[in-house]
Image 1 (spheres, rainbow, N blue to C red):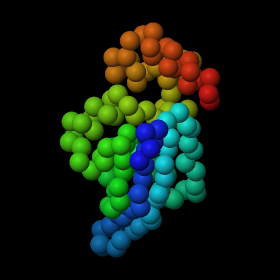
Image 2 (image 1 turned 60 degrees about the vertical axis):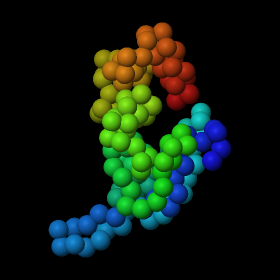
Image 3 (image 1 turned 135 degrees about the vertical axis):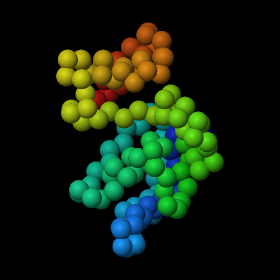
Image 4 (image 1 turned 45 degrees about the vertical axis):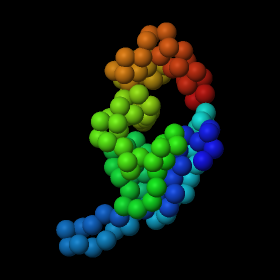
Length: 135
């Protein structure tokens, strides 16, 4: 694994089961690498597994099979406390308009999760400014 890889997914599969025990495969073998500093879009038709993949990337769900490495560490072996710390400090989602605060600027909306994570004001403003400029 290269040192600039933030995310590496190896054959990630996710299957849900209906009440009648019918398997519904949603992710069917995702392989991906996301490098530090890159921007990635996840696109697809409704029901194609975008939200499922985001939930796995955000450590809110686990794959049925496959390996997920985050900053070189396989997430399967992280404790719940470790995952909570990572979600608080390292993972951020910028949602569509209905989850943003309409009275805040783009930069201020980007800052909100960093406030909860106790990131110092100057650092969070600089990070927000940098991210907003890339959008």
